[in-house]
Amino acid sequence: MESPLSVPEPLGSWKEIAGYLGKGVRTVQRWEQDLGLPVRRPKSRSKGVVFALAEDIDEWLRQQETENRNTLRHELKQLRRVLEEALAENHMLRRELELTARKYQKEELRKTESVQELIKLSSELVRKAAAAQRAYAETIQTSKELGMIRRNKQP
Image 1: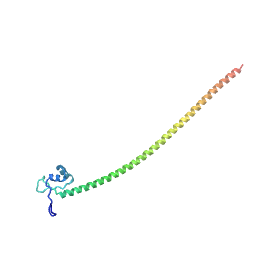
Image 2: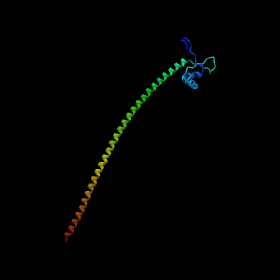
Image 3: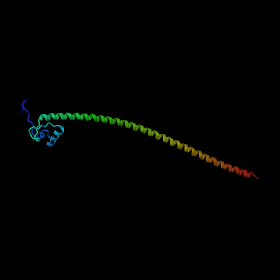
């Protein structure tokens, strides 16, 4: 057990650091390179010698967690904004579609009414043409009958 004044024992290799974090050696090496995992190298030693303090790693982990939480909050805020914009655009497009559909329905109704009116007028013309044809036929018949009557009256 450590006394309050004792110096914590450093983690003296990549393997010990990886074991402390519960990760593989390549992972912690990548974390050092990409994320700034606090690993130290003695100035007088070769490049392969490393060590780290558990409390530095613990602080780094807390910082990473905070940064990740902040990043997630920011991304969530952006996603909410994008969703709100998409919903607003969806509402606008639905409104435009409804207006276009109503306009199309009115136009179709107007066309249908126009066609119905044309059919009605055509039927009326056909009826009048038939009546005119009957009248013409009657006139011809009457003319023939009158002509025959006149011929018969002549001596």
